[in-house]
Length: 356
Ligand code: TRP
Image 1: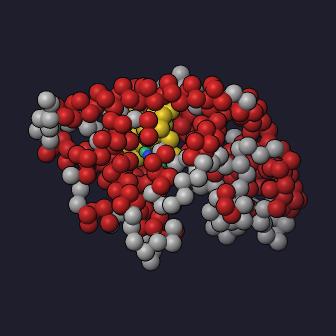
Image 2: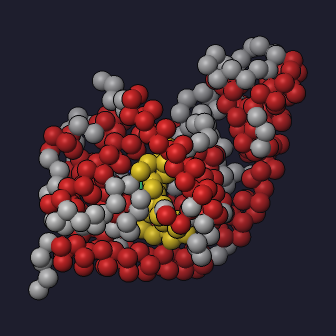
């Protein structure tokens, strides 16, 4: 079965994102960004070019930015918790190395913010089981996990995610296409809360998705990039490991390098990576290489990537030697998130007449 996000709603979200980009450059102060990740280990260049770089850009535009390390989401689709603490610290290391600044961006974890989690109770009262069961991303995750039945948390985690966004009144959520159904569910919950419990007052905002402007980076074999497929370049790799990975990348037999994502996706992918690093267009790089072949393209791509990642990797090494600092950052973020969540929960209880 294919659980696709409808092309219509994707096109609509893209158009809306372009409008929001305009508003962002004119008046960044009107937005509060909330986004996040599941902590399942360290990050690869797909994460970096697809989302992380964009978060750093938003932060540096002056947008109030919040990033959740969604530790409870780790157990939506797997029985094995793994080294969750180690994975959280790895993720945090990559965040800070890539340029998220804890003075400007609040980084926090689900499990340390009780009032955020409590919002899930009133929110669950606002959705029906069929609405939850219809979510295409949840269904796809169930299938990817090899399950035939939805676990309770897998079914309801989009409601939890609504709490992630709404506890801090986030109104802009940078995400990939797969997350659009969750944003839709969040908007529905905000709307219903306002109608049902807040007497029509617009207490919660109806947040917008902000879709990434960068093209999706594929794995080096042309498949989806993922650590388990060993088709990635991890941020934490050395320069030699990076060059080796790129050298192994799949290409095709045409020596003349052209940028043709439709017919030559693997070659286009290497051109895209190089273009992101060099701040050039993939077409201009293809033209420069011409008929020098895929070997030349790979060398250029590896050099560009290593040069681009060098400062990030240097910061990474520094951070890794200082776990106390990482914990300090996380605790400060958790403290801010708790203040915010407690304030919101108090207002919610007030709206619901549950103040004793
Ligand atoms: N579900 C998101 C993912 O897998 C991670 C996430 C958790 C998130 N909470 C969020 C994203 C809130 C945006 C907003 O990528």
